[in-house]
Length: 155
Image (cartoon, rainbow, N blue to C red; front, side, top):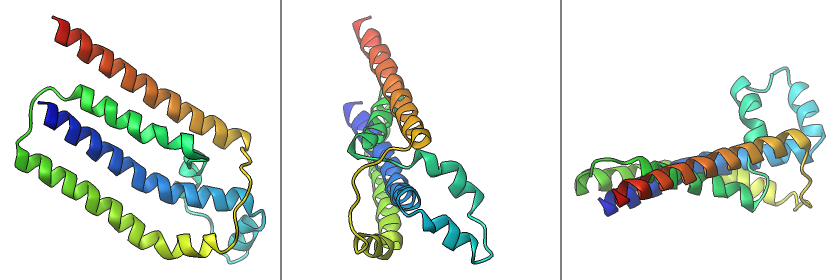
């Protein structure tokens, strides 16, 4: 059962970290480059709706990445039945493939944005509140699931 919980926790963490990395780069660029929205809107295209909705949740700094770890701990705490080693291997393999695919697709974008320089962290209110709410919710969920797991083990 321990290996099932570890594998599920790792898989959930990996699944969540990949999209957050891309979203973090996108949100950073739109926050720090004032002309980004103007330049994008002058092309005649509108910013995708899903991007606009998820943009405030883009990680702002290193502490934002506690969220995927907390979600992984929460998921591991909710596992009730063991999964076969083959199933766990496939799950971890799929999560690593998904993560590598996201990195491969966005790697040129990461390279180009690195060439633009680094910025001092500035936290606008809405993205800061969105990040803190995600962090708080995921830590609360992780604490609840771990406390429930500990209480179950005592009985």
